[in-house]
Length: 141
Image (cartoon, rainbow, N blue to C red):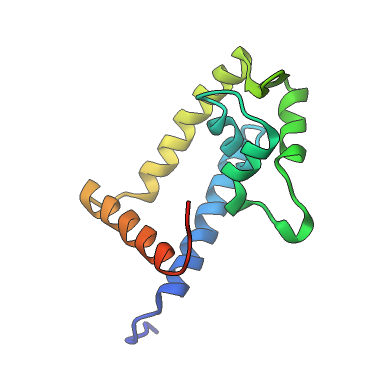
């Protein structure tokens, strides 16, 4: 039976967040990486970064209650040869760049599916609204 009372924004935010996490996790795990590893690879596309900078870049996705850090997610990427440890911190290797390019195509397909039926303007407006709400609640980047 369909409900006639609109559901609150918290319901939709949590539901969409969970569904995004589940779909991306499934898609990425099929290709041998976790969502956190995917995020770290993306951060490293532009330049090398220290562990502290990587932790800051993915902070909203880490569990501070369990003292989670990027280090545990980077270890497997280093072992796979996708990321190297350099003087300036962690950096993407050529092998990692190739893997990220392939994964980017897969993720683009996932994003296309997620935004099906939305115009570019609707998507952009949704992001702007959510950012405004986050700032109203005290978030600062």
